[in-house]
Length: 288
Length: 273
Image (tube, rainbow over all chains, first blue to last red; front, top):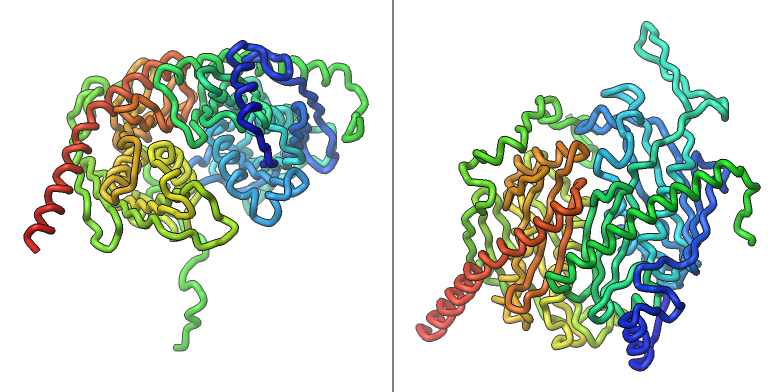
């Protein structure tokens, strides 16, 4: 991630600001920064979304494809995550530089979405035991401004909300069953994302913790935990990151914060997406 | 008949015979009264550990939790090869591998996604414990190979690696103790076997069920890694974290004793020469 060089004095300032529940940009410890979400920007995808969380910029495109079922789970659809850390975000990502971060984030998203209650996976199976929809969720990181995990999970959920899966008609032939994917752009079904999780990262700074840390705050934090939280408060994934360790008691406080914030975030995201859909405003695109 | 050795002899894709078996996963609710290996739900498997099993390595350890078996080797501290990787803090690398025959399904030789994920989780668990500032410009490599997979592999890997690091004389704040639990509604199953893991994970989405692994450093009372899988109710998860930390406390003396035994043996070896 982009270099953040903080002096000891700056670190102390951030530490104290967190202590007083009044962070350097005026937020309290459990506040998110301003964010912008727009869906359906890219016409070549089945669903897309762009999330801008302060200066973190993430673009997600979902493409669906018919594919053979997974032999271990022959009656459900599949979802695969790919993350491209563009060198536009920071020169460190050039070449294979972003691979480690990418595999870390995709692993967490895969785990968070792995719980069957998060999505209606059986409805993505076209022909049980044979063909199912494979959702390729491609994430493009355009700018790093801290809190990548949360921004990406927001963008993924928004893009899945926007995804339109074409309807399939099946005809029985003498040779077997023939699948016919509708090419009518208005003949599609939507995905139910009410159960989809969002990742909430809680950073430990000093003796306190904050959500949605900026890059500066991340530089002050040695350990963080990430939770996949659904709208109902179920935890679908949890992991700790960073070179520091955490006190046993503070972990449960951090989990409590993450759950509280995650439930609220889920609700406001779905509300915002619903409003955008109703208004049907013209696409703003990448130039504001 | 001449054969092209570069060509793979056999079908390009094949299915494991186990895909066609009806999955006989038992209802995890039944595990409350009687687990498959006769333990009660809070009981852990007996732990067998031995340090110094690979003579070439700086430190090594072997772990056995009934049918889960893993071996770990630690090399280093040695010089960092690439100049651009230079740092005043030491670097720790972890590689977690399954032997190809370790699980029911044969695994590929290339490192799969699960192995990569486990490697990262193991690194997260060990890094806070190692005094990396004492090893400038150098790297320490940890390699864990699972020989037999019967559940709780991540905690077995972490236990084994922390013992191997200690036996290598790497300076650490504390030994890292890891333990796992499976959750199903109100029931918590400590140290699950692979069948129990599958039974719980196959119920994910129906009610609250999932897996939790915690890595803990008992003498400084710090959690170095925590990871969960599945869909779990918040309160259950919170409660289980406590239970698993208590389990870690119980394992601590076993590791300490193994280490003391290892050092005594080493001492004997030196004095007899």
